[in-house]
Length: 624
Image 1 (cartoon, rainbow, N blue to C red):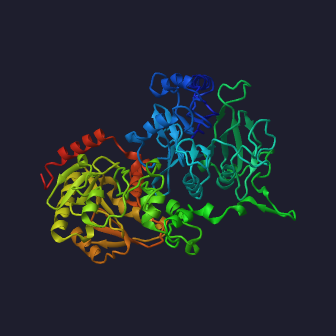
Image 2: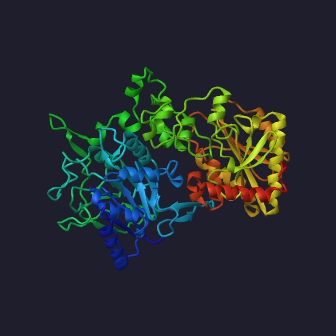
Image 3: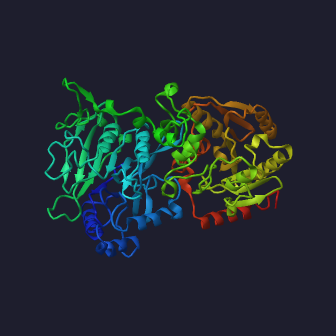
């Protein structure tokens, strides 16, 4: 795969005509380039510049190539970005950019993503030994905005953003590019800086800490108005070097460089020899030592030793909880909830809750999970209600639901709930109904759901189980007509959300591989499926239900031929909650669709897809 070609820009300051004129010229003479990454202040300083800026936002002028910017400050930023965040395509937990207009994306808060999974110029897929596929591309991490103690909504990053980025940095793999607005405070990192650039008094100590932890191959930052390309430096506890590049303001009077081109080979495709190569001008890491760590006797500590456990490993809400009179013994471990594991293991003083992690994956606010409420209220970018798998976004504030009437109002699957998305429903029986999945993996990906609020489909009363079984048999016949088999799987949570059995059709030619693929995936995660082979799937489900422990979570999948694979998930087990979908996405060579949030459709598209399925399924529908 050819290395992607990236353009970098410093503070645009709303001068988009000048920026994109230069980008178009460079793209024509030395391109094509795949994307433009902008650091620093993107919005204008004064209202007089808004007409030029709005020409692009409102479509009168065109953004020439895909452009990503960090920072949400400047004139009109709150109005424009608040409107963009409310667009249906931008709802949910997104790290790869919120679309502002054609070819323009806002990187909000913090995150890490591949640039860009659906762009064949930048990312492609390669096979595992077992035939599954994974995507390769430039790994980009970012922290958007400045440091602020005022709690302002726009223009500042939060402690949640910092802690989320720290958790992401613990994931396997090397970050290729790290984008920040401000520069660092470490004088050693700034050796040889031009005059007027960041100093310890104007820089950001958090950026210094994050760069030392993330160890990106390239650190790109907005500056005090100058261009600076530092000598590469060797990282502590890592084989690769880091290059720091600061970029000047667009249209600066001193004609400092504000556009820079890169063509970095993704680290995921490089050999060990390539990634560990040291250029002759490489220096020692500027983050190995800090001036603040020098003691009176001249001893020097590494900067990593000065970071507290609560700062590095989890979101520390102890002071906030004390204000509400809460104890600290039941607080959630941010590290576990955000990444699925905690290096402290059993020695961690915070709770490792798998169900909380499941909700976090679906975009629920950590503070809401930890305390039952979020002090940021409507300003928080995460969800403030518990989410069912495959369902959309709810921004309502809600506490734990205990009574059935409260539960019905909050549950996405209860037909009496105002939250139910009725346009997705395709068939309703006496005890069960069928609905199109939100963010479907493939066409005709549907959910089978009991009308009553049961925690799983394995413990349904006999009449409800028969209704479900009729729907399953009808779906098998329907898909067989089109040369397909159907895979049924369910995540049974001990928290007892509304049951939903997922049904995903696959080509019949791949049916014989399903059981093997699931067993290989289980082996990679370190467990083995329990297997029940039964010609009568209904009997197999009954047997599995008899052994179901309501104090445990369970994943099971019904594969073609009557075999049921099941796995009991232990309390502290690292288990991906979209496991079934991820495995089938690999089987179907569509790894980019493993997360349902990447497949969300507009309401009109969902309605058309549901109506199409309803029409084609009608002759098989037992409820027709």
